Amino acid sequence: MHTAMLRHEVFRYPQTPTLEQETQIPVHHLYNAKRSRTCNRRAFRRFLASLEALHRDGVHSHTTVLVQCDGDSCFLCNKTSDDMIWLYYRKCSSQYLPFGTAPPKEEGGEEYAMRGIYLQVDSDGSRCKDEIPMCPACSSTLDEMQYDQLCPALWRAECARAERIMLRRWQRGNSWSCRSTIFPPRPEGVSLF
Image (cartoon, rainbow, N blue to C red):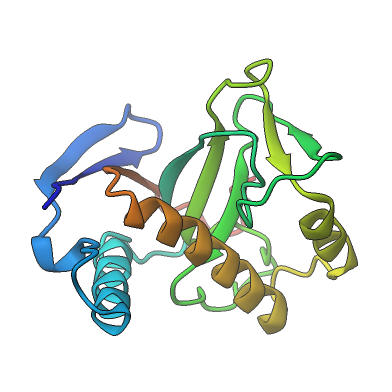
């Protein structure tokens, strides 16, 4: 049986991030090839619930689960193709996919503020240190979707993608890093962005 660690940092803007906890993931939350598919699915659901529990609910807070894109296969579906699309990766512009419970609709007009829990996919530097691969099929699916962050259908599709990425990583027994970002309350009428 393998072991895996969960590292959780908290970033209270504008202070530097601090380590909140570093714990071993319980065995009943890990993948076990000897268990049935149903039991492993339940274990994965428990694992996701424990990640969601790390999120600090607040008007201006979000939690990201960090994952490195670790190869030349599509970061969404894990397939390869002769005509892969390489998403240019810039500092602080990772690929973010929401998962978990949808955050409540923002009050006061800031509908696109980042809140809730997200999967953050970064480049591992395998190709020019700045690109994330995506197959043409996933790219065309994304292009067809309407980019309305409040659309329930889009949110469910993005969550499903995030869970597939996490399931592949979870089955390999990887350790995990998370960061909760909490912005201070702001004076009335002052925009955060």
